Amino acid sequence: MATRIDEDITFRKLEVLLEFMEAGSLARTAERLGTSAVSVHRALHSLESGVRCALFRMEGRNLLPNEAAQALADVAREVLRTMEQGIRSTRQVAGYAADRIRIGSLYSLTSGTVPALLMALKLRKPDIQAELVLGSNADLLQKLRDGAVDAALIGQPEATPDLEEQVLFEDEMFFATPVDSPRARLPFIDLSDCAGERFVSLAEGFATRTRFVEAFREAGFEPQIAMSTGDIFSLMNLVGGGIGCTLLPGRIRPVLPSSVQLVPLEPRYRMRQPVCAVFLKSRERDPNLLSLLAACRTYTSQLAERPASDPRRG
Image 1 (tube, rainbow, N blue to C red):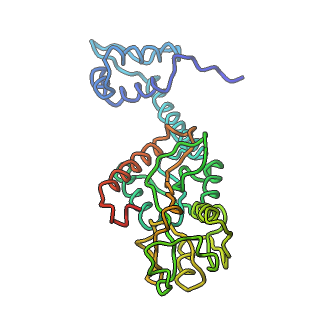
Image 2: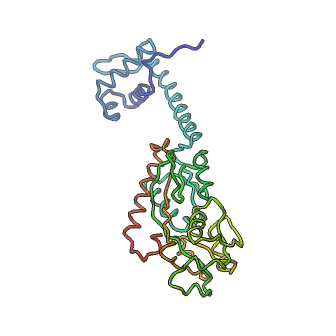
Image 3: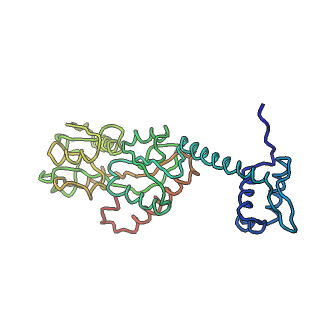
């Protein structure tokens, strides 16, 4: 049967012992640890009680370690090192790695929002390594709940009591058409006049696809879908190539091909698309996620300071 370790022996007291062995005096140890000499002496004395043997001797007014103290210190270094590695491994398994964060993102956010957030995050945690995972709203929400990503940058999901949200900005949907199309010269688009158009769209699960469906439901007809794709950059190229029209969020304007024109929708069809950073409420105290949350708030504040005409506002 394993020997029970006395409750007087704790990791904190072993740390005090190692500091004392290096500092050489109660006063210097207390100064390094930000405590009092009395507290240091009490911790060392309780270690003696825990191991049930003398660890120190008095020489004048000085407390000196003996060979038993040195033996315990050697073991303490190894124990603390092993425990530190064990905690790090445990946090990695749970997705709380101190030096790594996995961020899920929509494709459309990679040209502006993601780089800005990563730069702001690096300012707060210079040593952190970020891994980017791209996907649709539905896919990233599932990965978040499965622990495959730590946070996700997505279109605001419907009621999700298990998630914390931080709105980054609100985007507006536009009608996307080839630049040489007659519709490209209109001041706005009445979707009810577009029943004869061919359309392209994102696959199901994307926030932009959801807004696409809602808009045409309001227009009173089901659009003719010539092709669907799994990323927004391919979707823009399909529009530019004349395969069909679609609806796109304004945030893609900085990377829009010259062959594609965005036209505002008639007011009754206009809709906003909030974009959020989300993570599990169960991880709301994770230091990495708190740093990401702070970076998100900084990003949102910077967007608010830009003029309304700036395409980077989303």
